[in-house]
Length: 482
Image 1 (spheres, rainbow, N blue to C red):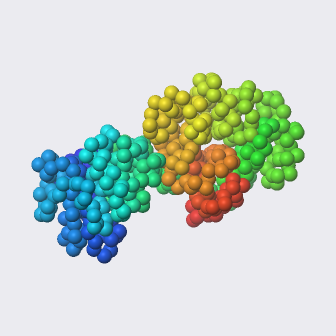
Image 2 (spheres, rainbow, N blue to C red):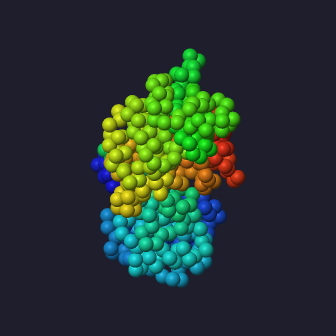
Image 3 (cartoon, rainbow, N blue to C red):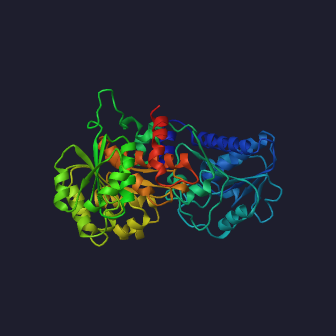
């Protein structure tokens, strides 16, 4: 954002004009929260975030709102555009103390923005605690004070906002937990920064919404047939038949023209009875798997759901990675390499096709222990793991991060707590595989799958079980493709 501001100012837009536009967005959001004028407490900090607060306070006062502006620090300490904004405020700037919030109908938190790089303490910490102890709705400027804009983590203590208004683009802290939970409703305001500055910024971080990958989403034509839509192969092994069934149905629903499940002979009756549109083949040893891979039409491979732990699964992963086809590694395929993560990375490095790994936090810690312990940012952990492994990493959770070895990363915010149920991850792995079978690139396929998975979960809501998710996909896809 500093680069965006600087480039915009260098292009001829005065910095104070950007601050005025930001302050107006704050005032508009405040007016939306209190349509009937009420006493608004605007709590300003010592930097540009406070400057936005001064502008918002002035406009609200001009619109007839009783405004009490409270400053953490002194006017004399303000610099640059924030000092200019303070001079334009004709009212009093009270010192923030324990009694100043009584009688207010709205608090505007303009203490600290997304650039906060230290834990709050002393007077700043006390100010946040007083805001949280009040019974007023809170409008946060940029991010709730105390939230790290890069990681979403809480810097000691943070404001719990009712609504947050931010500018130009969301910051990672608006999408990553716990920051997202503290933002309340989010409002993104454009304040005059042109999109032309984006190449100069060179950001590799994205909000995972359809605009990111929709142009490359596969759609069949009238000339399509089942094999032109791809053939997914799910290696099920001999355990937990439900996991592979969920994954295979999800691959079909995601658009794969054909799906084959390979399982041990003793498990075949279970799969045949439960899966009508899925081909079922015997796989009792590695030779059987090799034979299945001889059919080049099987062009996307999933290993992990219900595969079992140990050497057999490790061997199957190595064979899949050497088959020259996109591979998704999930569940047991990941945990089987807990003591041999470097061997997995080496096998991925030897592959010339996309590889997608879909760990939850526990699996991630087991495979990437040093990375997991070395950073507080989920975004940077996923990026580091992708760079180390050479795979696209889908680090799952309510704020799922998809990261590519080229440092592109996307954060999802459409997850729902109803997805926290057994088998949900198997469905996600199946959706990724189905999209890869249709030749969608690895990063885009993973991003699309995460978004579809979240939308399917939200469309079902309370009572969701994983079996519901594949059958919810047609409705989600119909809305997406129309």
